[in-house]
Length: 99
Image (cartoon, rainbow, N blue to C red; front, top):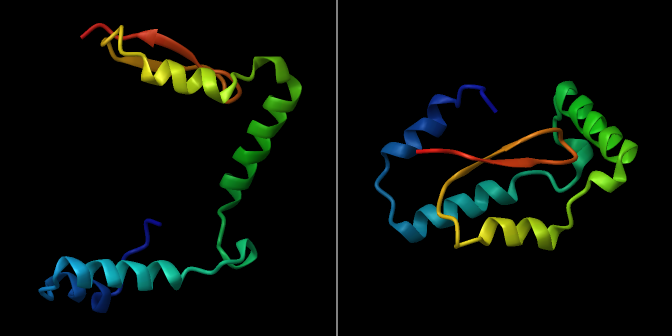
């Protein structure tokens, strides 16, 4: 995704478009992306990272956190202090960040 856009694509930024026209343009761009995963270029390092994370999850299924618990933690309003997520791909530990 770090490839430089063609000049013609950048020229679109200089054309005054309404919000509706910009949304239509976004829809056209989105629809132009292939539906098939086989057609999308996926860097090798992405594939390796997915394999690594799946292996970590398979190696320790008990380390998984249920989605409801994750959502609950994210929605906690009692503790306004920000937190950092640290840990392996299969389990995160939340640490309080002192601001």
